[in-house]
Image (tube, rainbow, N blue to C red; front, side):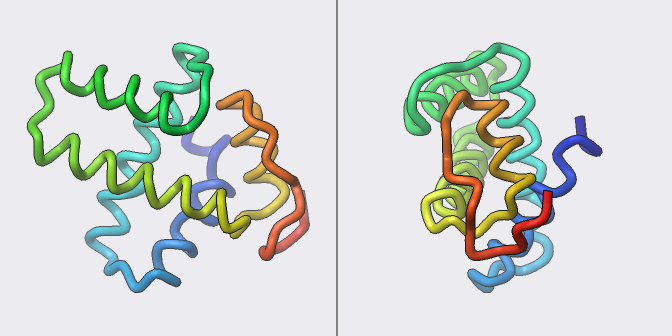
Length: 115
């Protein structure tokens, strides 16, 4: 899974760095994004972004994750949605996002257009 989502994670890291988020926080956010994407893929989660995030956070609560951990996950996923909303991703990332979530975000972006 990690290799499959390499471009999406790369775009996300670039987005975090543009936001001025330090390396330690970037690593934490990327970890939570990996968990979120895996959750969406494994359980074929449907619905809009906020609904998918609620389901993911509910799963974390069921797994007895702390409030702090759930807050970290929510922050990371919110930044991911921000990247999507601002179209700061490559065409390859759009295709991966659309496949995992069922969304249809545009494949044109402010980033590199390569697949």
